[in-house]
Image 1 (cartoon, rainbow, N blue to C red):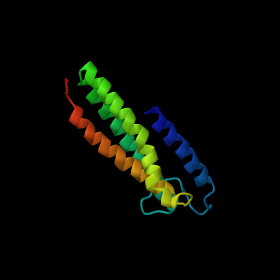
Image 2: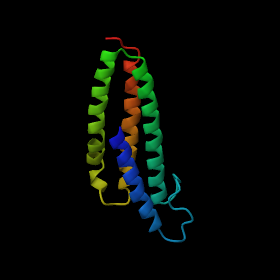
Image 3: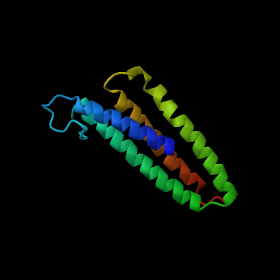
Length: 130
């Protein structure tokens, strides 16, 4: 999960640098506005992904507390495998827009959706003892 956080921080830094290059007539180009310019829509996608990631980490902790030690190990292994595949999967899904201004929106929207799906899937583990 730390890798995902590092990736989010790095991407945010890139997004903030891009925001600084935006035309001066945009008051707050890095602010999220779903109906705003591309940079503002990208900021919304990053914000939404971060919220989904926080929810995932909370749910993961709750579920882990409900498990027997051996089941915790199984969930931890599954979670690591899922996490290893999530970012590359989203990079592949957004490859068509790579290098374009819409790429962050597509990439972070994919991360958000995948993360929300994984959060829901964690409920299947809750309370398992074997």
